[in-house]
Length: 102
Image (cartoon, rainbow, N blue to C red; front, side, top):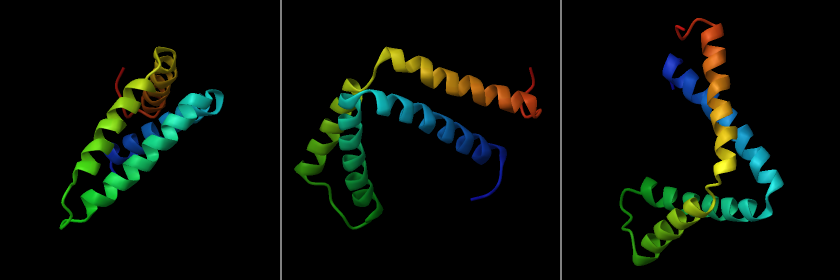
């Protein structure tokens, strides 16, 4: 991967949001359980997409539906503030280093 503004931004944002997710994950057992299941589904579907000869089955479509259901169930408005703070932190860092104009 090339070292560009876009990749630097993506890396910083992902790391900051991952930290925010970890804080939420550690304080809510139900969120933890559902997030873990989403990870399992994601890994299985990703393996399917990486295999160019694979064909999705009805089981894969069920996994997709389950994933979206879990995604809806794990959305907590109170966690939105954590994610927004992560974005604000990224903008502050970029502004500090002159990567963004005020």
